[in-house]
View (tube, helix red, strand yellow):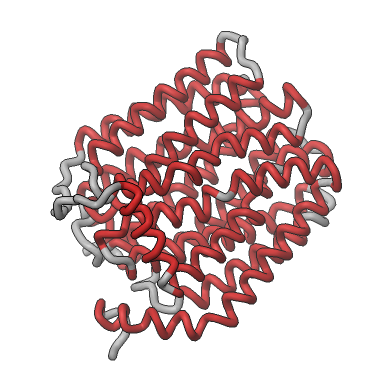
Length: 416
């Protein structure tokens, strides 16, 4: 019998999916660190770092609602496989340009936007696909937590590898390794055999289907409140990563290795958060946890802005990583549990837009603001706003919990 914290691994398809994705996510984080470091080395511009983050993430905000509607109608396994193949081509193109020595800033930004388009299509489909991989809702929250654990293992290992590779070899070799990791992804998808969910024939026009999803989410206080808090964290909290090259080089006086370790420390904190969430039996009590986690992340971000050296910043990065991860994954787990199955893709696309979709605007604003008022003041402002959002959620927690309780009672999560 599987341990309670690993119970989703009893499903063969989920194990295969997890095995392939861990390689891809390590490669993804290697590429993310390398491309931002390369762009800053070529240009020395914090504003362009914001542009890079904006270009890579704005498609998520614009396209994820359409992808969510599509995920309620398409063959999830086939669509996921195709997006992975296209992401492989994107990584190979970036590697080829860098190895040839002809890469320019506009290449980096354009290819980041292309990857952003693919991720915008993939993420809502991935959320809905998990239900097929674990054959029902019983192990779905655990699958969400383990998937997040996998992602943050990549976030921990990838940046550290990137820092070493950049120092010893070059950014181009980082891009090449990312492309090679997709071999494991392709093999895993060829071995997965899912049973597609039974779907009723859909006759609703696209715009009407999108409107239906928005209205459903807005009219539910729990869904609306959780998405709004997540949007604040996504817009004002997560852009700290955009300013890492500036903080490391200009404030801490460090190099690529320091940046790799700092981003890795955030990943270590996130892994701690996912291990805790994976050990939970169900979603009960997660709203209170979201309040604590988002407040801790905001406070640590404010303190990070005042850190004098990399050594002081490391533990704060762990708290930030823990807080943001627990906030985002807890919201994911609650939504996956309470949402109606026929609207799952659309609601999870709103989740994607609220967290990853707004972050490019935050990154663009943070990069531009840092060039005007400095990175320390920019990070302080973001941290204070995240802490304030946590306090607002705390004030509404009991009302939200009362509306979720009937759903939890029906699912047997709490007793009547």
